[in-house]
Length: 570
Image (tube, rainbow, N blue to C red; front, side, top):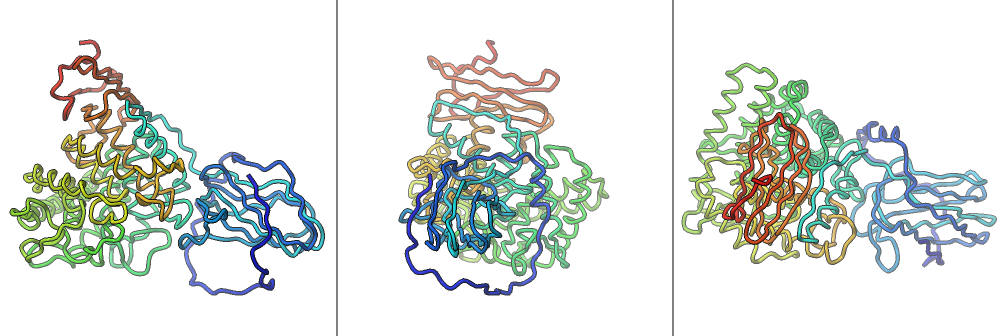
């Protein structure tokens, strides 16, 4: 769809203005995907004629959010100027370019004359293009405009379908969001920042792992982050262009956990050896922020979630993530062949810190984990992260699992899309759903999914948003926790995220509350696993197809565990 209109105001005088910027790194690998065959997704075939010396504003609607290189097929005199911007949505029938700060938000091309194919060098994520054509001394013919899609060439084998049609839709939205956030590395979003972040990587990896056996993009994303380690031995939160100074200090820990998970899924010893060099230096650097009481204060505020007030100081979230990181570093060191005394020291540090978690952060009167030490008089829990991160990453915290789960349930009763920090965001859903899956609380999980993703279903864009309301990016793969949850909890094929999941066998533990049947395929590292279960006349029927030379266990969990069960007809 193209819309032609008069510009809303007089155009500024043409000319160049130099805007100096700091020298920043540019990864040539971003353009490697050009070696992949390009797909012309949308092409406008009806020519548009534009009168000489008459500026024209054209809006192009691609029909859905895409990732690729914007092109124009245009016949115009020399000196004609194209000014164009792009956006995921519209405001007042125009591409909503000014919605937020955007990288690569606008382009200008001065044309050399005659018919030319004009194409941006780097991809952009968008649905709408506004293009202003001006400074043309003779008529212009726009023969076409659109996008050449450019993204990572996944081969998806993971599948999911269930009795809840909204959940099936969300699975597809999550899969598409991952595609749009995958170039040579994972990006947080295709439209706004288009940057590799260590925090976004973990849920994106979770989605990739249940969709495809091809985890090369995970490896390369981790490699780029490993290259960002600074002179003090600490990894940056994003790469290849770091933020100013060390920021978002929980992100390097989440990258460490993701690296351990990747090595567990792939047994990539070479990468473990490469990562060990960085993590050994990080394990030494972290000692400088250890407090006298044994807790750790991050070198800068943690991110934890958008808009939080409690990010600085010895938070529960940072310390339990550090517990998991110590264990991750030890695992990676063992795989890399590091000396036993070094990996044993890391295990010792993990155990020492883990032993402090419950007594330090669990409020025995309120029966919930707090963000900051209860021993210091703190009595605030901002949203779900303190409880979910503690249950996921701390073995010691699990003694309070029932109370923590009840606290999570109570918090979700007051979910408000306008105040996500006080409950949960789509980003935090990865930790929430992973913790609920670990403890078979499908009732809380399915309710949370319906709450958090409600507007994405009511106002569909084919993608998952950055937030539970459409105020920010409309394509953010950090929100795709539902894919990992549906595969690992509803289908029940465990994929090794937590230390409770053994990847030397295939363990299947389907768990659901309102769902009456589910089927799908999960690309487990030991081979593709097909699961098909249904409830009929009060009996659970499960059909499993898995590699014959691998140990497979099937144990229904949660509400499904209480039903009579027939597995593969027996």
